[in-house]
Length: 504
Image 1 (cartoon, rainbow, N blue to C red):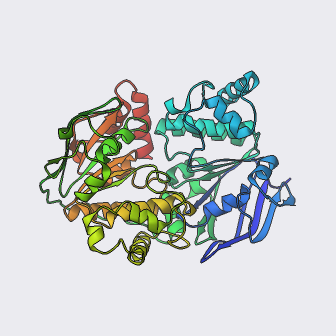
Image 2: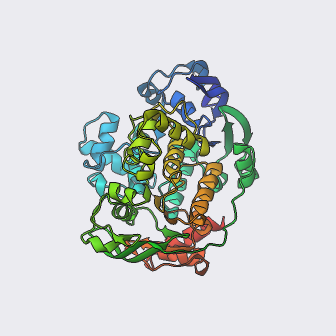
Image 3: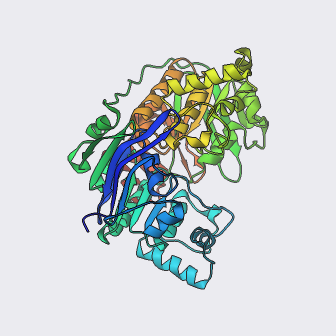
């Protein structure tokens, strides 16, 4: 057998979009093959073809030297193909074991419990089958997805942005697992925008642009910049961090505490960007919810916006006062999956004075506004009347960020601004965040990406176990001191991993 999988001349068109244009892609046993490209390059469509979610318009699928058709996800699994999605398909109110059994169509019994323990231990993915999912970190939830896939005994495993929510230490543990699976002779497809990870892990890379294969390479033989240039056609060049003119205090937090976070003090002034660093699961979502008004503070005075106390005001009232918010979770939180891009634009703007003044309550004008967002942020889509769930994760992220930034809010709170976004689009988003601050807005960026924070922020603080540190000028931080603060003094090995990752 020469190969495990070969996709030959795969073509798939949607109204107005040629998602895959005669794509060739193959995976050999015992290799990790990266699939790279900008958001909208065709990666997701190709994987939907392979996982049985989409039928190609043309082309051949060859599995173990035999041409085959993959008519459904069940047929894909039956062949021996498993997929770990970027968005976890787990139920928080159920146990680990119940989630695994449900995904496999089996009963959760003693035998299933033993299988989960055995598989998780064998591959370095420790899981307690009886633990409730809502108590787990993002990394532990991902282990559920991987163990569930492995219990299906796949010969080919697809991983879509697997490290986007992992700490550096969790990512290293995942890489050890993937190398073990590779050494067992399985094939792996690794989809990621983190090019240094691709260079360190993958044997080959296929690069898509505009639905076509534009290059193949051995990632270790190329620099991250060279790979990025193949992906987007040019090397993205970040803009300089311009000198700021800091204005009046815009967002202020004083003694904000609940069961999940403790924020003694936090101030963001007009014209500056303040960064909040932290590894996943340390209270970022709780902090965002309090600042956006989705969770009300115990005391109105604990949060102020332009000098007015807002701790007991909801998101709509805060938006009326000039604030805008970008949550981490795209589908279901930042956008209603089954609503069009037009309707999603309307929902977060309907109460704002500027939105009403521009006449955007009119459907035609709202459509124009949505198209303006898509054009300005290079959102690849089949039409603004299409559902939000029809966009790839990265394209939906660009739309959501653009939807908030295009209003030029006086205060912006954004959680993980470039999550799942390709390098060129990430540069565009960061440049626009800088421009927003330079125009006089106050920007608070919550991020797990150290490079992003060092590039953007004028001042930095750290959220660790729900407690926010004092802010310090970014120039006063080093990767090492920031890593130690993020990991906590009790776990300097994690800090060392953070430092090592950034250095590479």
